[in-house]
Length: 89
Image (cartoon, rainbow, N blue to C red):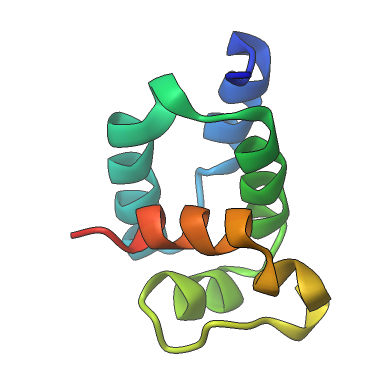
């Protein structure tokens, strides 16, 4: 099931970051995937957006594939798929 308009709006609001690079990557992600974002993907994206700007940037640019604060969530297929979409050029 796709994410509700209200939940998508909240995610987009939370996506406004302190680092311009994060903003650009997240903006590109929403342009490409907002219409097909599932509730599960939305929950994972919400957890990613709760990270510090530097931790998020490290994940987005592929410097790391795992953040300790997210624990086993980083190993789930849905997390890997969302991260893959975020890293698309």
